[in-house]
Length: 276
Image (cartoon, rainbow, N blue to C red):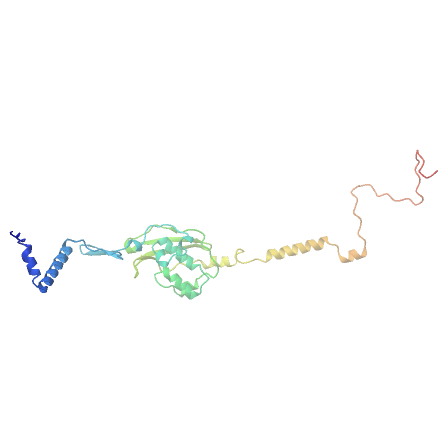
């Protein structure tokens, strides 16, 4: 019985591969190289799971765009003081109104020392505040009374600027914020000269009845009550020298005077019991 003829293409390759271990190693390396080249040419490029920045090149101009999580917003969304509470400086720096409100919140904080206050305020400014702004720091509590009010953003690109107004008990605090570059990307920062509150208006808060207790009303009340009491109460000498007078009668007729002598017996139609 005749044996079937082998495959004329695979039979020589199989005999060459199995001829020695060297041929087998060369064959495996060649197959892996062909697969690698095929994957490089026809496969899809690997994309990283997290890309901090993306570069876009147009001609000879290259622009860098921050990732969505690090992008700043140019929308002037007004915020209140409670809206920025608990947020980090990086999160606040994405919005112009939020940056201005965070600056105002730190500015009216009197619970920290000058060094701590200056460091905290410097998180939202282009550079660390100097001695001038420390000297203008409020020494009495100043409350923020409402949300921010932002004006139209001017400029383009890194020159964009916004004017934000924060209402307080001592007047409006007007803050100028601008997009500035930082090691972590662009962010909104308060521009120098840094805004401060009017010292005269802050001084009025230190003497207002809402912040300093006024003892005058209490003393006036005590004096008035003591004067009224002394006017209504009789003096000790008058009490010891004379008897208190009876209350005056509401009638206009005079009080009858008793007549001395025996009491007359009235005429009765019937005898008095026990007189018989």
